[in-house]
Length: 334
Image 1 (cartoon, rainbow, N blue to C red):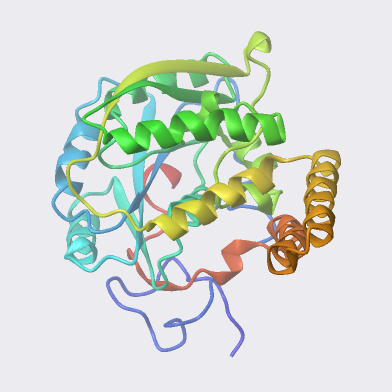
Image 2: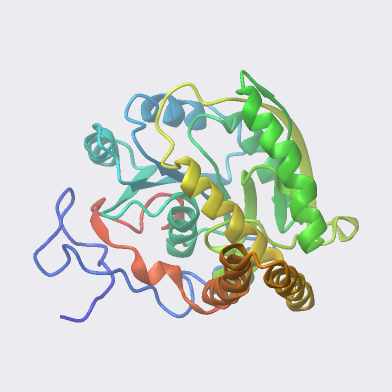
């Protein structure tokens, strides 16, 4: 059977026989691609895209925080949860919430692909004028009114920057302190300005970003020029997550870091990197260190493969929807 998208009127809380296990195929353009913000529109529609895994205890508190935000009457906010491989009661909580709260809807993925693809999927499914991508615990909802205000003033991207992180484990601070200058050295990309993926994107900017598959996993990409007013930066203190489970083992974190480097690196820098690795391999062969030299020969081959894979494969094609809320077009995106 050919894979297809899930229709908005399919039953809630179940995966029909012709949908269960099928890969979700997104259209060539995101839903609502013509729904960019228009000056003078009566309502500004915002979707908050939230990946969740084992967050059953935090979802109700998060929704309450969003609903209590002081937003203008002509701003309509909905929350789209992308559940990604939970082993607790997260899906049951989302199922109940989507029935009781018109602001909330959800998609439950069968595979557990990680935050990047889950968020990208949610952004591409949204019909809102702008989307806010954020985490349930570590990203404070109190910043949302500032982000919405900046968007209504003309910003295409409102990027939050973490100035401090309370109760964070020391080794993570050290790893971040080493990774940021390393990725800047290799790629020329200022990762420090995007040390969290908590940001608002206009529909027009999201369409541009989603046109390139390489940004779907790492969620860092070139930002607009701040001087032009298209970019607004918000600095904030953020707390470490207290509960819920990260999907990322050390191996997956290292893989994500590698994908981040390869997603951001330019073609000329990629050539230089591979030449350096091959020169090292030649030196090791000359020193009769053949096993180690072989690794430096295999390295460029793997990096080139991964480099082109990130740029040519639409990772959304691999996502499998297990179930979704009854009306996937409601909330702020209706």
